[in-house]
Image (cartoon, rainbow, N blue to C red; front, top):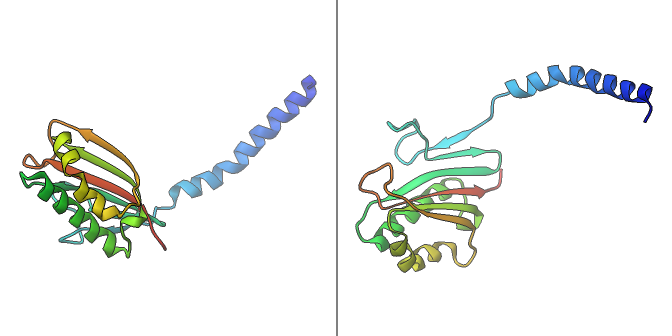
Length: 152
């Protein structure tokens, strides 16, 4: 490519960027439309979060904690809560594409995994499981958050 052609290309790119600046400013200033849901109240909790936020056809569900010392019961508590949130949006576990599971005892979760698997009925999402020292609620032994794709 000749020196003249390189200069012309550079000026074209600069002109294109300058032309796009107003469009980018408008695109960035448009607020994201969010539908929010919380189990007990429409507003935020003391912790400063919402149970679920829907943007477009994507549903982001915050971590639902389980607090029963029996991990099987704790798992059922968590997935019942997640099911309630999904149902609010007309969804089921078949809509879930990503699951993050945090626990203080990964071996107890593994031993009781049949409880979790029953909710998915064989249609499992991508998943990440982590063992951590503690969760936000000191008595919690499990917390799961989900991402689901649902209809408009």
